Length: 343
Image (cartoon, rainbow, N blue to C red):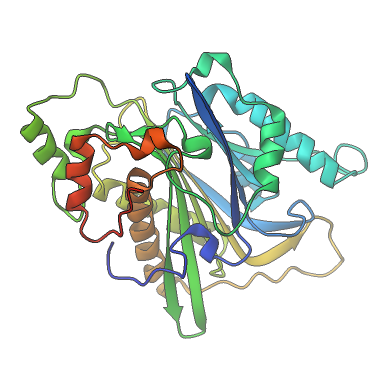
């Protein structure tokens, strides 16, 4: 999508050090899971990163965004899951962080866990609250630069544009005079109606609904979580400006940002590590010039747009989701700019 060149994997893990892990629960009416995003491979509590968040529509139940906005840093992995499992995921992430850092709650302050969610109740027994704290640790331990997209992890039970939603990812390279940088996006998609789906400016959703002679009978009450990573040297203020541009990518796919939608963006930069304890010296945080930020804006828009669409066309490994309906097959055949694999 767009004009900019993607990274080698065309995923958020093209930003060096960023990895993603999933735990997927696929048991009859239980279709849910956990996705973990690790911002770097060291101890993130001890070496924090510049971070920012943006709320497009606040019908969401995230944890940890208040402190990110106040201090401008992130100090834990990011966990994604379903809405009613946010509490359990938070507990699991706290357990993991305490195991890694004996000083938390003892000789230093507490920890700010970061958890995001979407509501998978259409396909999952969300009331059963099947996520356990152990699933968080498992997802973190399984994190890798190579990871599945589609109906996996937190995306297992999600619905996007009336089709199967889930996890999607994409990346873009940012060439500047002082270096080549990367921006990557991961989306958890659970929003939209089919008639609004737009791909490369083509109103494919409207074409499909007209062909099938159907009209939406449900309100758009879904949500999307956008996780943006970059190695671009930026301040938290600049980073917030960049992640706000992911809204453009959502809009290009047809997103209407309905009243009941939780649309949350969380971003971090790996360019500078900020130590937990002061060392008596001034911190040096390099940043790009404001006049250099436009390419990052475009990268955020393009990567978000492609990540949303990737969540729709990526096929999970189990047979149930390999069997596409004729309507989805028609849609996939229209995606001429994607390398679509159905098996």
